[in-house]
Image 1 (cartoon, helix red, strand yellow):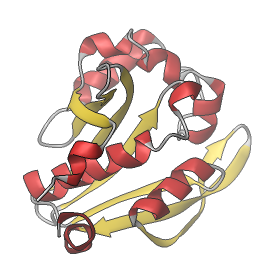
Image 2 (spheres, helix red, strand yellow):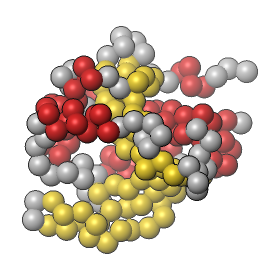
Image 3 (cartoon, rainbow, N blue to C red):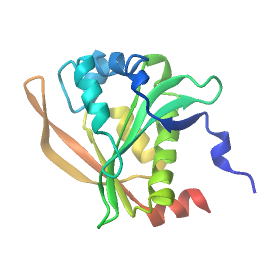
Image 4 (cartoon, one colour):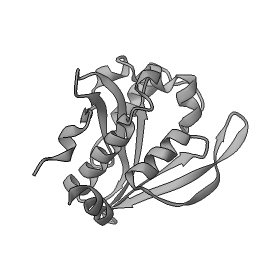
Length: 181
């Protein structure tokens, strides 16, 4: 049987300190990215490095998203708030640079991240939320089969305004049914 993941255009690798200067710092300070991220202020290199150091197992795992065709680093994907008792975690992802957005790379990376969380870590539930104005994240979550659980009213404060967040989740059994059979 053919492995459908072999057809993906991206793969995940361990995040590296060098990735900070290899695009990550620029991406998170890009105006369009800031509009969709929960932070609303520029991040300097020192602060990003401190954040990078905190993304460690067993509380979180972070990956670089890379293109298979040329190994180019194009974004990040992370499982965080890993709860080993309840077998749950949150995820986040970022595709950097406009030329890589809207091509399905974020959806593929999310499927790979969920697979890692469910199959490798043995998690049962992975969730995330997206600011209601982040149409591409909302579309991608729904496209890969995340379930919309509800709206977190005025859960984010950005640029002097409150924004709702849409809460999404997927259970291991639903992932396996959709992607592993």
